[in-house]
Length: 285
Length: 156
Image 1 (spheres, each protein chain N blue to C red):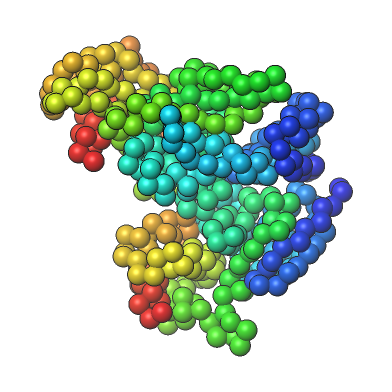
Image 2 (cartoon, chains in turn purple, red):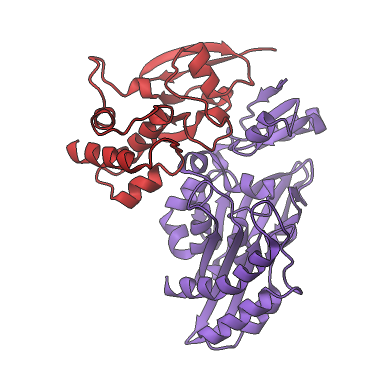
C-alpha cells in the first residue's frame, strides 16, 4: 500500500533540515513526472516525500556572464524561451521533446538530470553545451561538469545531503551552433532509440571546435571525444561529418546495448547516420 | 493515515477538503468532488485521459500530488460550460463533428485543446496535433478530433 507523508518546505534551509531529519526514508520530488510514477508502479516506497515545488526562486532562466537555469525550470519554460531557442538550440529541442505538453508543464530540468535515465532528452544537449551542475548542501556549493555527473543508469554523483539547484552553461557556448535529434518510433510520448546532439563552432568554413554527445549509446549519456577531436580544424563539409559519424559509431566510442526498444547494431548504425545530419541541422538552423 | 487540508479554486468556486496526502489530484476530483469527467486511463501520465488545467497549464492529474493543489486554480471539463449550461465551442464542435467515439479520451482531449486555443486562437493543423500529442485516442484516427478543434477555433 502506498503510504507517505508529503512535506512542502518553502526554503532550501527547510529542505536541508527535513533531509537531515528523515535521512534515507525521504525522497526529493520536483515535478513528480518520474517519482510519482515510480511510486504508483511500486518501484519506490519512500516514507516521506520532500517537495521542492515551494522553492519558486529556483524556477528561472537567465543570462549574464553565463547562462543560468534554475533546477526547477520546467521543460515547457525551456521549450518556450526565445533565449534558449536562439542561443542554446539543442537544449530547446531536447526539452520540447520530453513526454507530452502535460509532462513538460510539470517536469523540471533538474528532475530530468537527477533521474539520470540513459535516455534523458536534456542530457545530450547539456553535454554538448558544457553544462555544470551546481549542487548545494548545508556545507556549501560544489560544481560538477555534467560529464562527470552521471555515473550509471539512475545514478549520479549527487550525495544524499545535496540538492541540485542550478545548471550553468558558459556564455561562450552560445556561439556554438547546436542541435539535438531524438530518434524514436513516434513523434511524441516516447523515449529515444538513440539521442544525438552536436555542437559546431565555425570560423569561416572551418570547424574551430566541436561537441558530440549521445544518449542510449552507453549506461550513461556520453561525449564522443575522438569524433570531436577529428572534426577540429577540418572544413565543414559532408565527407568530414560522415567520417566523424564512422568514428563515433565504432566500438571504441559507443557500445549500445540490445533492449526492448531496439537492438544495439541499429543504434550504432543510427549514430553513424545521424551525426552528419544533426551537424548539418545545427549549422543550417 | 494523517489527512491533509487543501483549499483551492475549482471551476471558479473556492473549495476545500481533507484528503490523504498520497491521493492524486485525479482521485481527489473524482472521489472527493465527484467530478468524473477526468478519467484514469494509464495512471502514469502517458495517455492524457486525466488532463485538467492548473493555473493555466495542462497537467496529468493522475500523477499530480494533491497536497500541491493548495491555493491553485483548477479547471476541469465540468467547468467549461457557462453557468447557463451553454457548452464551450470545443464541446459543441466535438459533438457536431464526430470528435467523440467511446468518449474516454474526450474530456482530456478537450482540455488540451482548450489550453491550445487559450494561447493561440488560430492554430494550424501541426499546432493542433502537437497540442493533443499527450492525449491518446484508441477509437478514432484523430482526424475528426483535429477537425473538431479546427472548427471550434474558426467559429470562436
